[in-house]
Image (cartoon, rainbow, N blue to C red):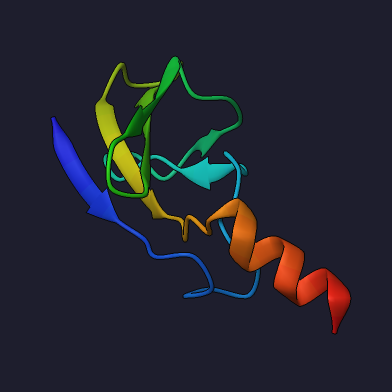
Length: 77
């Protein structure tokens, strides 16, 4: 399985969610991941399988986790 690390904000569209991406094996479009998982520490892993070539890949999205207190402070500003 190929691991493709893409940090949020590294492309024209922030990869905050599972946006369409291209298969790293045949470059066909991948529209929805087979599965997604939250990894403790602020990362979401999307597992993809290409309908065209059957290739499997994983993309990683780094997210920032803010405490509720931090969000309240920001709302008051």
